[in-house]
Each structure stands twice: as C-alpha cells, then as structure tokens.
Amino acid sequence: MKHAERRGRYTPEEGQEILRIAMQQRKDTFSVQEIESIGREVGIEPDPVHTAIERYRQIREEEQRLLEQERIAQEQNRVFWQHAGNQLLPEPVIIPLPQPSQEEMHRLQQGALRRQFENATPGR
Image 1 (tube, rainbow, N blue to C red):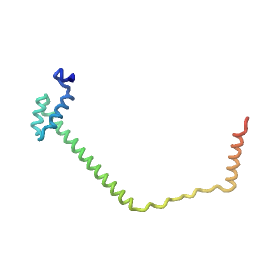
Image 2: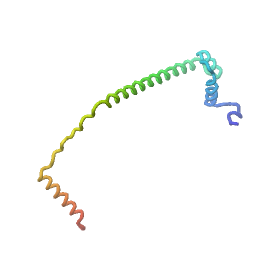
Image 3: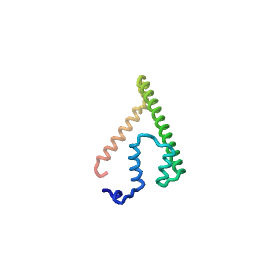
Image 4: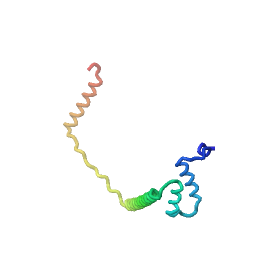
C-alpha cells in the first residue's frame, strides 16, 4: 500500500491524477456549472475556475492555429518539392581562377624547394 493511501490524504498532483483517471471513464461532457461545482467542492472559487476555462480555450485555440500553420507549411513544402523535382537542375557554373605566369610559377617553385631544403638540413 502506498504512503498516500495509508494516511488517507493525497497531494494536489495525486488528486489531479486520480480525478483525471475517473473523468476518463465519464462518457459525457462537463458544463461550466458542473466544473464550478467540482471546483467549489475542492475549495476553488468560481472566478479562478472561469479564468482557467478561458486560459484553456486560449491554449486550445493557439494549438489549433499552430497545427494549421504546420499543415499549410507541409503542404507548401510538398508542392515546392513536387515542382522542383520536375525542373532540370542548372549546369554548374565554373569560374576560372587567374593562372600565375611562368615566371611566377618558377619563383613559387624555387621558394618551396628552398624551404624544403632548409627544413631538411640539420643545424640550420
């Protein structure tokens, strides 16, 4: 037997979970008056209940708005890739880089050879 069951008292979280399970077994819906009545039975005045109902509605509306935005974005993405897949990809653009002159190449090679020689010579 759990500690909460032995003492006959439940935390707000435990009570919420117990009531959630019990309410899942209920087949019909709750009116505002029924929710107010339930709230009164557990010491919650009607004003906080009304505030909570309004907040719940706002959350649900926001969730629905976000789901609709996501659905639209997915549809736009699907249509984009459907059309993009039918298009030929453009040829790659090749940008020629300037080539060094023969004199410049000779100077670069000489510098590279000199550095290799300096690094390979002990005591330098």
